Length: 258
View 1: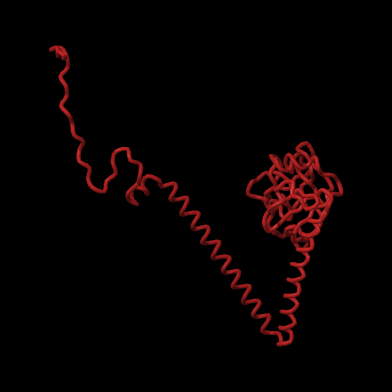
View 2 (view 1 turned 90 degrees about the vertical axis):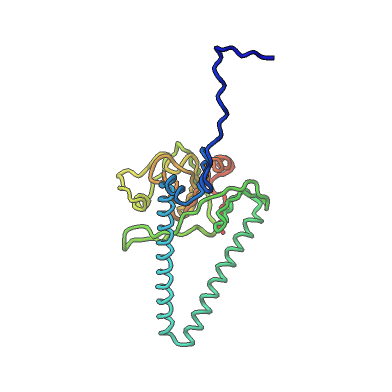
């Protein structure tokens, strides 16, 4: 049995929460039950999403315009041909496509049967393999540089994804220097310096191949220090993957692109 002293504060009467109107969120409830509530709560998110959607729609419209332009140009050229010329052109295009596919398949098979340690790259899948005798020793994701026309007219070069067989010419670390091509600065919209030899320009690990192709990692210096830009005609891989395979590579080893 408990005694209540007069000095004790009186016990407050029980309170009932105020009624909540139907359809309105409870206090502390962060869920937005109405579009207007969401719009007022996250204006920045909606603005960013709207801008991204507008950019994507503009890109789709530009690609559709270019496709229609190319189609009309093809139709114009074909209309000036005779039936014999059109059939001959179609056969040549089909034969060229088949020849290219056969060549890629032969390169892939050659990589599988190569008994020496080598690298092979599936360009369309963006995957690089360290292989030997048909066994895959390491699988590495890569980013393939987009096709681009570089240089100053009329001295321009079209760079595409590498295909075929290359050989290793140099193996670089972060302490090694590499002469950055003039067009790499121009592609980034940067001023071309007088001295284009940059230490660590290809990141902490890189492989320079015959023909000018490079497989590099994300650098911290030079014009390639941009995660959204991959050097055209080359590949970018993770630094950890390249560091792991560099000790196994030497000058003259094969690298297959298919």
